[in-house]
Picture (spheres, rainbow, N blue to C red):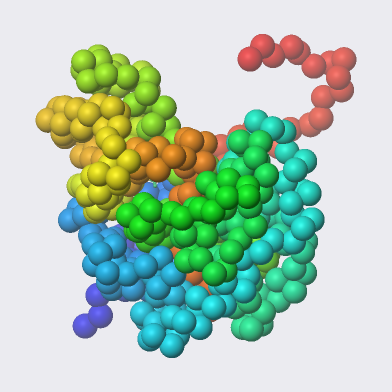
Length: 432
Ligand code: ACO
């Protein structure tokens, strides 16, 4: 017998049988529940989508209670240890790890697309000297839409694959230009002869006219960070990507919207906020007073808590190990001790324990980025480079999903009922 849910409507005494599939009922199956035939029917109310599955996906699996994260079935810890960001991007997009030939062809394809149109450079030069790199990043990604009008052909497989390769290849170049812009330094052109990460490092840190070789430990650490950030199922920015893309926009403008959602301090902006918070705390002895302020409702402990993880974020575990490897090369950061003490105190404190608040991916990533020489305003952009792959994989899955339509939530209207227009001289002043 199929799994069903029996609902009794106490208003009418009628019973309804609703199928349960994959642990869910279809919200539209509730529409039949109504008092009169001309009524709209029952809806669900779920602000912030806390208990609503908006799609069927085969890309990323999370078990928030057990702290499990898998891409296409592969545990994140194994990918972080054995894979590269380029290989993981292939996996997320295509569902399988590439063979050696497929990997070579995918790498070659990305290398073809690293360069940005010269006018993009001019476009970026228009930003103020102190513009936040994330603002530059998301505007420039959106502007790419005007350079590739064929990107509108989202259902043409070949055209779509070209845009996918372009986006993954060009986002590090945009990030590199945005960073150099914020430092007032000349932009460095991408070099396809270098590795994907080595090229990115050079675009950020190379001095004009001199050679640059990135440290292999730091290169690998950034590769691992990009793998860890590559996808995280239906998070805020990915939902934005799917939501915008559902009106059949091209991937550039959809991705600009996703990047905008990532920018917020509750999402990808948290890594920048964590570092500012650690700097504000300053020393280990100030930690208890800071924790008290958080508990008193004066701000949040940034880098802690997650909508889905109610145990230690598996990405934070890998990042913590990576931080030690990076610090062996760069020397330790005084803020590491502050972070470790914060974590130690918070994990023993009933406020955090009872709310199941643990370090998330952003708690240690900022410390690594800082040790590598990045300034905090670029941190969300680094997150966006990794997450671009997930956004695109999820966008493509949405486009090919026959169940999907333009995203259009319902609302519960509790405002004024119909009333007649009042001429301006007859209106009574209403103070807010
Ligand atoms: N510090 C202090 N208290 C917190 C924190 C925190 N970081 N996070 C949640 N809480 C408290 C809330 O005040 C609330 O307490 P209450 O029940 O007494 O009102 C309770 O824990 C539940 O919090 P919600 O806001 O309902 O949790 P939600 O799932 O909506 O939020 C979020 C998740 C946004 C990540 C939240 O934990 C947060 O703001 N964390 C800090 C920002 C951060 O690190 N964001 C990065 C997330 S990871 C990512 O996006 C890549």
